[in-house]
Image 1 (tube, rainbow, N blue to C red):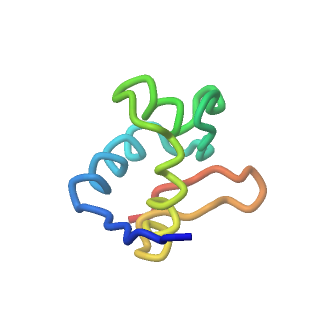
Image 2 (image 1 turned 90 degrees about the horizontal axis):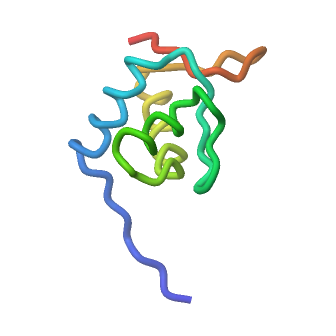
Length: 81
């Protein structure tokens, strides 16, 4: 199996942060075909046509950077900046 390197461009991350700032708190919603209604992934898919699965790469990095956190009760992503 050949593994490819994967780079996350700043504009790519910023576009997802912009959507998150508008819709959070909300669940992630990373399903490729049917992201949960009112989720970050659903908004991303409807507004840009981008696969919501990309959030599974971006959101953990944003949590680590202190931009957002996950509410352990509701599992919603919340912006903390």
